[in-house]
Image: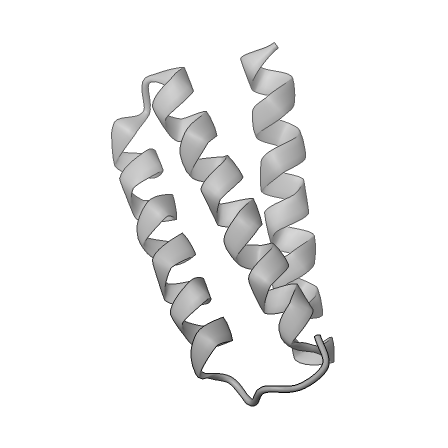
Length: 72
């Protein structure tokens, strides 16, 4: 079950990363995907992966917050 969660969360994260140029909402969705991927890393026992994904989540949230305000 954890493997399925990992595949879905990583796929979601990568799709949102590819769609980021389309709008700020995708940056926030990418951050959510990173958080899900980080959770997967910790649940599967791959804590270095979990830490790196948590850092990427933080970076994406900062990018979202510093981007132009307006529509998602």
